[in-house]
Image (cartoon, rainbow, N blue to C red):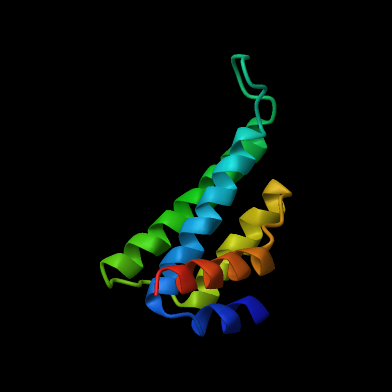
Length: 108
């Protein structure tokens, strides 16, 4: 997977930024599963898959912070791609990589 190669080239700090930006994108997409101001969820199955994606990203971020990676990067991105496809959202990782580099430059 090309994304895994690019991700592995990031420093641990950049990986944390990358995962945080990915999580932010997923949160916004999750909000798109319900109508603002209304009760209930319009697309519960999509929201469920997005929540699983958020869970996987947060676990990965926590593993980096606590230096307890339990999965290889390939496994993480394979799991992510399955739920991304099920949710039908296709996270734009190229954009996330660009924003990661910008944030890294700002914070260096």
